[in-house]
Image (cartoon, rainbow, N blue to C red):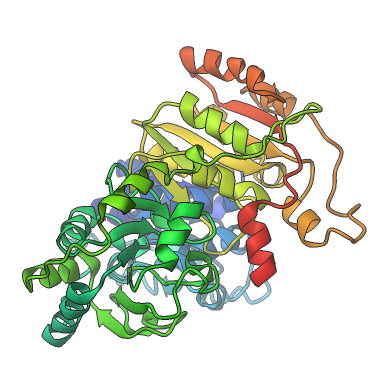
Length: 539
C-alpha cells in the first residue's frame, strides 16, 4: 500500500460521507482508494461543481464530505466552491494532489497552502510516508472540530512511497461549549422582562429546534431564522419564517417592533437585519455563538454569550424563565397570514411571461411537501426562498455566503444525494443556469428527479435593475430555449409562460421521474425584486 492508498483508506475508516471530484493523474489513486474503502464517489464535470456538491452534501447529511482534485489547475478550478464552504464553516476534506518539492519548474506548481489559507480554509499535507496516516487524521480532526474545510495536500513524490499500516482513532465531534453562570443569569433576566422577544436562529442553531422552541414557549418569544436556517421552525404556530430581505411584510413588522432580539448562532448581519432596519432603535440585542469573535461583529449587542445554542438554551430555561412575552391573541390571529403565499400581489403575468410570484406560489402548491430546495444567486432568489415551503432545516440548502452566481446546480446535486428521500428542487436564474450548465450532465447520469426552476429574464437581472438608466447591452441576452437545452442533456424540458403551462409539470410529477425536469419559466419584469430593491436602496 502506498501513501495515496493509505490516505484514501484512512478517510474511509474515519467515516467520511460521499466524495466528489474530477479525476486526473494526481488524484487517481487516492480516489480509487476512497472507493475501495466504501466511500461513494461522484464524478462531476467541473471541479467547481464538485466543490459545491461536496459543500451541500456535508451541510445536508451531517457527514464530512471529500473533494478530490488534481494538483494546480484542479484546485484553482474548485476555489470558488471552497471559498463558499469556508465562509459557511462547512466540515470538508479537500484531498488535492500537489507537485513534489523538487518540481520547481512544473507547470502545475502553485503555492497551494497559501491559496487555501487565503480563502479561509485550513491547510495540511502529508509530509512523509511514516506520517501520512497521522497527517490525514489531523486534517480530519480539524475539519470536524473546527467546522472548517481543510486542504490535505498530497505531494506526488510522497504519494508514491510505501506506507505502513497505522491504527486509525475515532474522532469526536465539536466539544460542548456551555455559557458562564453570569451570562445565563443575565440572559434569563432579559427574557423574563421582555414584552416582545424574538429569536432569530442562524446556521449555528441548525439541529437545535427542540431546545429553542422549549425556551421560546417559556418566555413568549416569536421564532424566526436567517435564510440559511430556513425551515428550522416549520410547523411552529409562533414562527415568522425568514428574517431579513426575504421576510414577509408581517414578519418584518413584528421583528421591527421587538424589544428584545436574540441571535442564536446567527451573525445578525446586514442581510438578516436589513442593514439594521429590522431592529428597533430601543431593542436590546443578545447574541449567542461558540466564538467570542463573532459576538457583536455586525451589530453592537447588549449581551454576548459564548456558548453553543443547545446548551445555552437549556441552561437559560433551567434558570426558571417564565413570561408570556409576544404571544398575545392578537398576534396569534395575525400570524395566520405570515406566509408570502398569503400576501396579495398585482399579477404582472401577460404578453407571454409569468409573474415570478405567481409562478412560485403555484409551484409551492404543486410540488410534494417532502422536498429539498436549493437556491442559486441573483435577482430572482427571493422568490423560491420565500414562496417554496420546506419541511425542516434539512429541506433548504443556501450556498450564498460568498454570494456567487452559478453554484446552484452543484448545490442541488449535493443536497439531493444527501437526502434521497426528498424531491430535489433548484431555484436558479438563467445566468446561474448557464454558468453551472455542465453539471446538468451529472444530474442526468445520476438519474436524479431534480426539478430545475429557471427564472428566465434573459439577463443578469440584478445589474439590470441596479443600473437601470445605463446601457444594458452587456447584461442582456437573447431569449434562448432553455427547455430545449435541458432536453439536449437528457432531461424533460418545459416552457412556462402562464399558469396553464404548469400542467406539463404536473404530468412529470405523476410519472416515473427518471430524469431531471428543466422548467424554462419566462418571467415578467419585476422592476427589481423587492429584496434586491431594498438592498440597493439601503446598501
